Amino acid sequence: MSKESVSWGPTDARCEYTLRELERTATNAVLRFKNVSQVLPAHPVDIVYHYTDLAGLLGIVRSGELWLTDATQLNDPTELRHGLSYALEVMKSWFPYDRTDQYYVFVNRFSRFVDELSVDTGIHFVASFSANGDDLNQWRGYAAQGKGFALGFDARILAEGFTKFDSDSSAFAAIYRDVEMRFVLQPVIGEILQAAWLAGTTRSQEMACPSWYWDGMFKIASQALLRLSIPFKNEAYSTEEEYRLLRMSTRGSNVRSRSRSGGMIHYEAFDWRAACPASLVRIVSGPAANLEELDQLTEIVATLPFTPKISRSNIPFRSV
Image: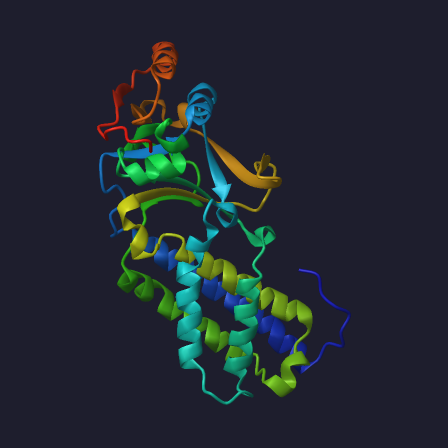
């Protein structure tokens, strides 16, 4: 973290101390969540499905790679703000209505920071699956309007292969119940507000700490809350029965880029065929998939060292 040229005094030392304490708090909060997540259902079903089009299927099977996308660049990144929005609501309900109060200043600056969160702050990479391998909405949304495929992976084998060499990787079912979200986030929010109080900042003293302090404060808090928010989704999406692979990254040499809609998407690859080749156990073709593509798929599968079961969607074709 670059720092301004400032005259070091009591305020600067307090800012340094507060940042260290907040970083420690954030790290401990994530570790606590890992402990909590161990009692949540990691593998709700035997098979989890990844919906994609024909090109995606061919790429996954031939290359042996699954791509994990920067969480802030998902098709619908607003879903990540479900937990962050709750965190902000709690913060605003806790601070007094005195507009010079230090909580008020911190919460409003944090709110602006979250609103302006850019992809450059993202260090979370996600691959999404579903426990439902034949869902009309997902055929429409993620699999070429029903012309694509759903690749079925054994959840246990996939998770073990993904996490066995990397402590910063995890696999879990999405949680659609806000009561668990509150249980995880509330203690962290309180500790963040405590850190803001320790800085002794009021509206009239907002510049008492230099800008590097505020940048660090906001970034540490945002990344911790985002990491803790990723498993939680709005109940409106519960029919997707989502299952996720999550990897923490520092945007190092493993990060790649691809183009999408005129922009660049950052992602990391997971070599599932090297780590867990037996995890691919089923391939379901969409309700609108054509016979030629099914023949091509059969030929490709015949060359693999494993034999996933091939089946077709049971949903009647109605111009999906």
